[in-house]
Length: 145
Image 1 (tube, rainbow, N blue to C red):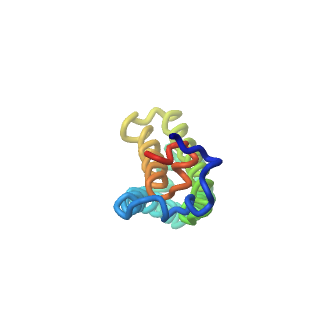
Image 2 (image 1 turned 90 degrees about the vertical axis):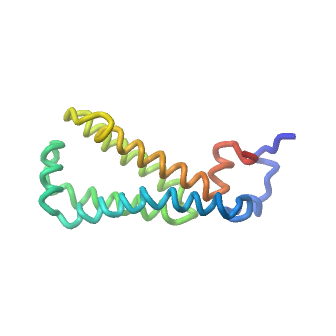
Image 3 (image 1 turned 135 degrees about the horizontal axis):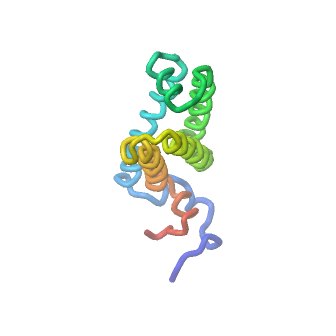
C-alpha cells in the first residue's frame, strides 16, 4: 500500500520523527561542507580582499559588486540553515549557484573545476536537506524510501 501526501498527518512530517539518527546526522554532515564553503565564500566577498577583486574582474563584474553578492549569499544561506525555511534557501541558493555556472561558462573557464563546481555544491545542499528533513522526502514523493 502506497502512502500519499494526503494520508500523512502533521506530526509525521516532523523533521525528526521519520528518520533514523544516522540518516539525520548524515544529512547534517553532508550539508556542512557546502554551508562552510558558501559561508567562507561570502566572508571573503565581504572582506573585499585582492583575490576576490581579481576573480570579479576575470568574470567581467565590477569589484564593487562583491559586497552585495556576499550579502545576498549570506541571506540565502541563513534561509537554508533555518529548518522551516530550508527549502526556500535551497531554491535561492540553486539560483545563486546557477548564476555562478553561467558566469564561468561565459568566460570559458575549465568545465569540471570551475563551471561544474557550483553544481557539486548545489547537489550536496539538496542531498543534505533531503537526508535530514522528512518534509524534503515528502516533497519529492518518496516518504517510504
